[in-house]
Image (cartoon, rainbow, N blue to C red; front, side, top):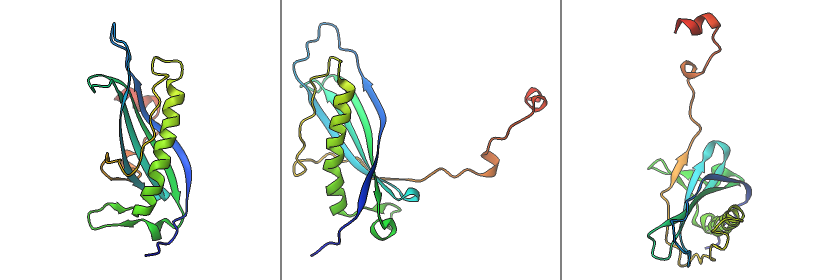
Length: 167
């Protein structure tokens, strides 16, 4: 089957969360284990598919977490409405070919984000390994993102000094 080419642009990288935890006293860093998960999010209003990548940097025995990163890679999908469709469960179907293209790109991008953030720390030699997609099984659940609706009642208004004092 000949699949139609899906056109997209890499439009953003957002570090959603990052933490570096103190090294326990007398602990010698002798290696690292990377727990990597990735999942697709859809922001239909802006025509975006987002690869949500979560990385935990652990000791080799997975007993202590040295660091944590959650990074989103944003992709603008050309002809979004034709490519990404809402299914009966209320989730967007992202074509497998698109997901299999943007996942390794995103994981590699996150490798660079982590490396630049760890420079000069005790984790500066924690370089995330290359991830082979055939072996990659860790998935975050798919979610859809929509801009929150703001009703007129919730829109803040500027109050006079007298109104503020009355409260």
